[in-house]
Amino acid sequence: MGAPASLVDNRFNGDPILSQSMASDYWISRLEDREAIITDQYRASSGIDPALGVEPYDGDPRKWDMFIGSFRALVHDVMPSDAIRIAYLRKLLSPQVRDSVATYLYNPALYHQALRTLKHRYGDRRLIAQYSVKALRNIKPLRHEDVAELDRFACELHGITTSLSKTGDELELYSAGNLHDVVAKLTYRLRERWLESARRMSRQVNLLDLDEWLSELVLTKRSAAVFEVSDDKADQRLVRSKAYGKSRVNTVTSAPDKIVLSCVHCRQCHHLQHCAQFNVLPVQERIYIVKKSKLCFSCLEGGHVARNCKKRKICGIDGCTRKHHNLLHSWAQVTPVMLNRLMLDSLRRQRNSLTSERRLVCQTRRCCCP
Image (cartoon, rainbow, N blue to C red):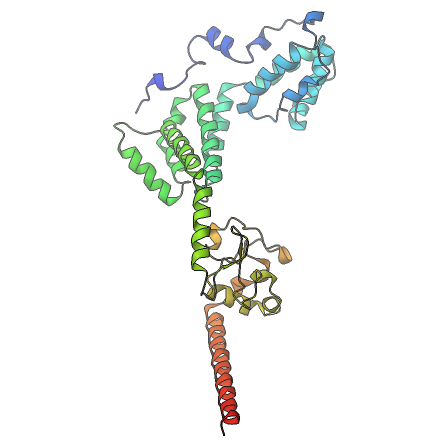
């Protein structure tokens, strides 16, 4: 199905003269072999290094236009001689790119040839399309739906669609295969929402539609995040109002907005990870206590599960790369049978403790009664 040409920026299709003049590196082709001397009125008037405003070029064709445009404005049109220009050019290339044109970088007379070689190797519009498709397939899947993760995914997709639109590569933008690959990287819930939105359109959807839909979703998420602070304060007040009379909940201190967690193991006012009694237990018993108390395996706090924990970090013990609390290291080797045995042992200890308390009460009554 052909895509309407009006939807894509075809600046580099059609008239080759017009296309060349609109590219950010068109001026390189017009350079004369003689050195261009900048008069005093164009010399840099401040002591600020102009190269600070140019991001070093790493060889990605998608970044070529930005690099060469900045280099022209801040270095080529400002520096008074080719000797200085080529020194800045050498400084602003990554080692790999610098090696590819090293023959021209140590002779000011070859400055123009160095620019032409760079344009030939990295300014090809077809390379931009190829790198964009490669980047499209290498986008990391969306792990969860918070604002930061959604923004990361949407920005990567937007940068790629912009590059493809810039080169006028309609086939890749309207490819059903490319669209399928990107949608597959969304979470299941977002895939459902996207498909629901796509069905409302009277035409075949494409990457540009998905890009616009994700951008709107990120804006909505950011707007909703403004209300999260007030919601969190309301939730804290609700927790404090229900805290009295419960054994394993948050207790209230004298400060009106401060909540101190009560240890689920020893009932003292400290976090579970700082509990001396908890720390000396075997790891299997620690895991059982955390599981029984419905705490997060990453931060040992309640109210959420490990996959939604904002404090998740790698264990690090013995090179362990799993994201659980280091006090629960090796929890993956704990089988359901071991957990059941721990549960039975815990119930047996509780029953023995109750029996001992009853015996003590009976003995006390006998001693006190005549």
